[in-house]
Image (cartoon, rainbow, N blue to C red):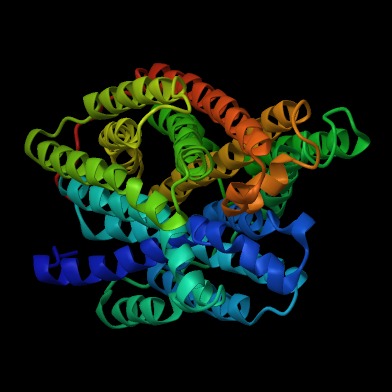
Length: 492
């Protein structure tokens, strides 16, 4: 296939970036809108599912999207993912009760899983690995920028209009992405007679759902020893073990066992899981600390996180150019994870008197480190995959990244909630972690004693989360040291 000219690649890349932006944005944009959604739709106890179910379906669907694109072509699947996402966004905006909202968010996550996975797989079809570093860096920048801007944009939309526009805002932007993909993306149409591994998809999805329910409910809704949690753990083990046996026999496995015989893929999968898990600790709890302890408003909190984007922008661009020039890449994720480990540890030492400037500097350095990690890992796994496996290899890497985000968000939330409730149990009555997280802006109206108890409890709980994140980052450093660096191909 002839190399597409640069202008055509850039136009298509614009469509890929818009799709990636929307799918990533909706991971976090609802965070600041949850109190308003609860006020209109009710269901405070189910409110966390508005975020959780999106991560769940996004993570569980990624291997299915990737394998299907290898068999039936990426363009048609990418179009389908965008359409599902946009239709679900409209339905979320029209939801009349919390049950409808959760169901529509599940469908939205399904589309988002395809958009994020296939954006990177399509890019692999367009650009050679050696040149892919810059483009992957830009996509990583889009992913992080959207994740950081999500709470800020959500708060602004709620303030100037309604929480429903948190979802409606996707429609015009998504329409542009859809138009570009339909009219400008030219890829060969695959016409395989082989079928998708539906049984494997069901087993994997069931196992992942059980696992994510454990991380979401254990310690919050039920104790770890409760029949509910034990049953879910047993279900996760049985389904995932059955999935492993099934994949060895399936004609077209959704997660081919041969991928796990590739040491590059194994290292990348583990490192992506750990690094994304650690990222969500910073994204979730830095804003919470700034709002509750420092007293920053939701809008200004979002602005204080922008230095992370600046750091990621700088490091991804530099890394992408150096990879294209030298063809070497392993040292970038090693250095990046060392930086993020140090920064996460420094964040675990903050106190109620730590200045916003200090926290902003830490966030900037974290961005510099993180920008050197994921784009390079995706390039490594695509470079090491056979051409017919690029879609599923990319999707599988994305699956572990999405799984890291989902489990990280749930586990860190559980650690934070348990720690904060333990602190508040000894403070003024009537306070609990759920109420603090649901409406941080109301804390300023409480008594001095209550505010002091919450500030101290939140600081201790957030620093506990950050220390755990530093340990996870350190584990990622050890893992990435085993990455085998292979020469980057110069042809697509």
